[in-house]
Image 1 (cartoon, rainbow, N blue to C red):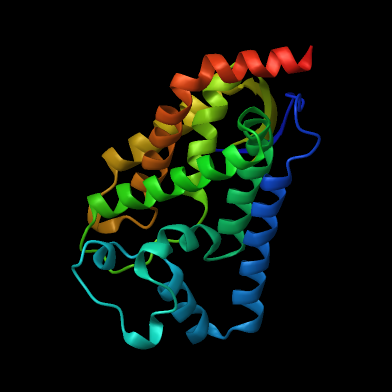
Image 2: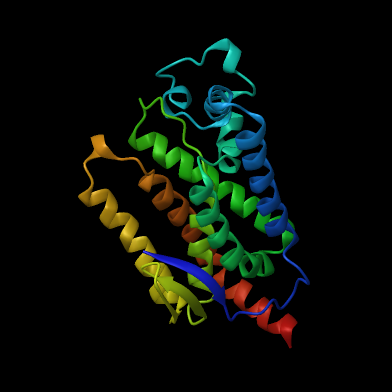
Length: 232
């Protein structure tokens, strides 16, 4: 749909988005490790061991003992840091880097980390609720990043975002239109795609976004006023 390039919202409280940077670095490091140091078979086992598998979370299946690297509930966090390919990683990291710094600015470093992880967990649970018997591992940061997009939409709806529309045309558009359009695209994709042909975890995106929206909405007034007050 579009690729975010830059926004015009400055940091007002924190000096640097340390948590966003740390999340970015961990995602890249895990990706490089799995794609450079592991062969195809080991990489697949790595994703299966650390990905969030709905059938395991809902007790529809049992993981082979040799693949049990961590307790199954812990995969609700570990799955966020594994990506299938370069484009999967780059697209998630672009959205994270453009939007997460300002959300971290609003929530604070620790608050943002908790917010990010909760949105990612909610995304995996939403996906598992829809396809409880699926044995395909859910991987990627998109569910957690979706929650960040919801928070940005509520906190900075009038911000201008430079995006690459349809991968060709760079234009500035209001965050409200860009992110509402992004969410609408996720919903449309769920409605229009045959469930048996789904290769993208649309419900994880929707679940993460809804979680971010629910968490941020009651705090929006406080967070926005705190940003303005500290900026002044």
